[in-house]
Length: 148
Image 1 (spheres, rainbow, N blue to C red):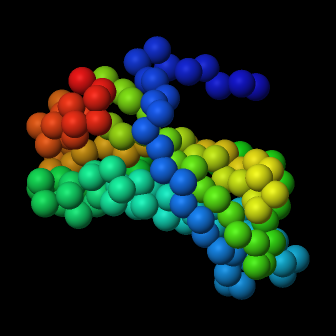
Image 2: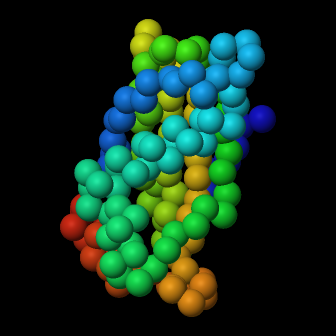
Image 3: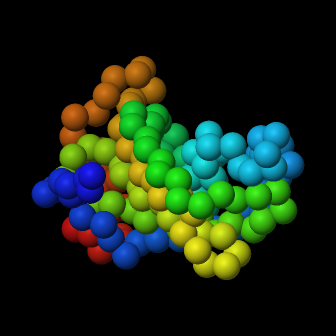
């Protein structure tokens, strides 16, 4: 079943590609990447995206917010194996709501799509209160990258 795209969410061309080497401890007894590790690969891609595009976790924290994940999904297409070098493409999905959405495409060294996924993060202030409006620093970032 194909998922409908929400009308207020638009995939952008703001993306970053990051390589990860499959580690021994990423694999199950069959020597393939355990399914839960792909979320870690998404995290690595998201952190690299943030450092590159000026919206890192430290930047968010410096503005007195944190952004916990409230939703994640992952669809597996092909396995990765110990020693493979995977490429994680992280794509920012713009939303009018006070949240950050990222989509991920993970490719093996043969450029075959092995996994796709998405994560959604919300903004909490340092007391743990969820922001219902987009924080000013994030609006500034959206202006800087040409989304506003």
